[in-house]
Image (cartoon, rainbow, N blue to C red; front, side, top):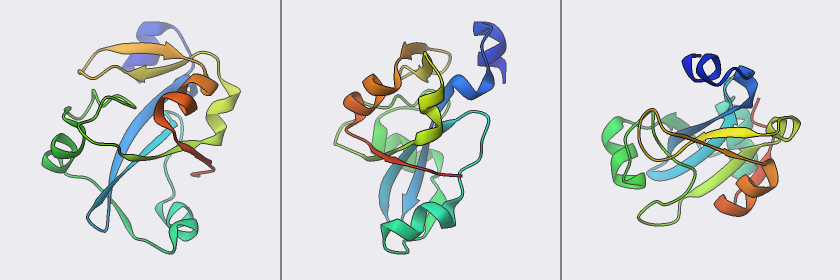
Length: 123
């Protein structure tokens, strides 16, 4: 991952902001750059909801931001957010800051507070 190389950090310490279309509602999942989200695993505790990757237009409408720059907060309306518990292992975490190529460092605790997110294993 180019960001990890640029920052000289582990790929796992990059917290990806992945937006999903959860039956018409946005769902932001903050996950480690080293992992993939298991949508079936995540959907189960959400009542069996089906998740699919959001289209670029859906991302822009929900967050006001472009793919590759989606910040964990600062969206036009609150977005339900899940934070992968594996991110606890990294300090700092690097997250997008609202535009492609922009990053900011946060602690896991700060990420939870900023997003109001729910902790969940996503892989």
